[in-house]
Image 1 (cartoon, one colour):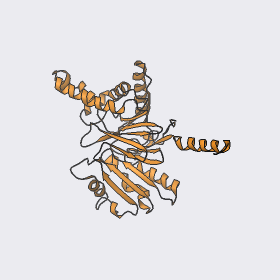
Image 2 (tube, one colour):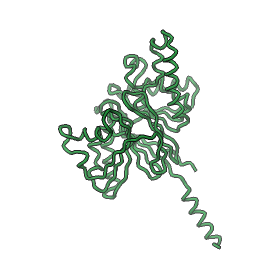
Image 3 (cartoon, helix red, strand yellow):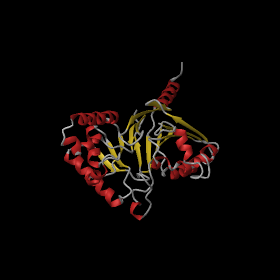
Image 4 (cartoon, helix red, strand yellow):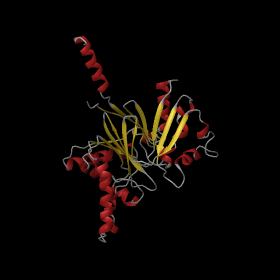
Length: 323
């Protein structure tokens, strides 16, 4: 039988093994559609969709937009010549979500492993789409020629694991096949919908209201209800909030969100933190500031507890470990 000191050591070891680690999230690209470098976008950034999540000894990247390039440089600096294993989750294959892949430096080191997961998103398979953008005449080096071990997997299931991290997916309302992801980690939950137009937004359309088309209205409610249930009570929701109300009227049906609808959606879903995402290429820092102020005003008028920020390149978030 172990003595008191031995028992204490065993208890400490057991507590240590059961202890959970914080979840870290960092924004590397927050812009939609096309990169927007320049003096008016310095504060929020001009790179397209890319987020890094460190959780439960996993490195998970959400989307491979141009933000993937600086993330790759940081990873090489951190790991030096040690091997790294990274998983890239793609919401869909529009350019602004995959165009950083050819410039992701870890794939040019043979010791590294990159696993790319996503759904088909087009009439051609996922592997064909990703390799095509690195073929001549678009790029000098093919994806199949890079030294790293790159594995592309086309997902069929909507629920799976990356190590201990639970991953769930849900269809988004965006042209083509596009999903949102929810990561459930030991530190909390993160939902990511970078491209999504709430069906509720169509309720502003006379086609739905003026003509009294109850079938379409009910369809809109049901589709939004699915996503609302999917993200309910998450710690962090990162969601497409590209347009203000006036802009949305000119872009209805394009597959992007109106800030009014997104804030209402987050409030209804009891989300703890909302990060406005997929900033419009025409929106400068001042415009995004004004949208944050407007969103917070909506929360205040509803007496809600929702915390609203605009996603900003370099911004880091830590979800404390849950014991």
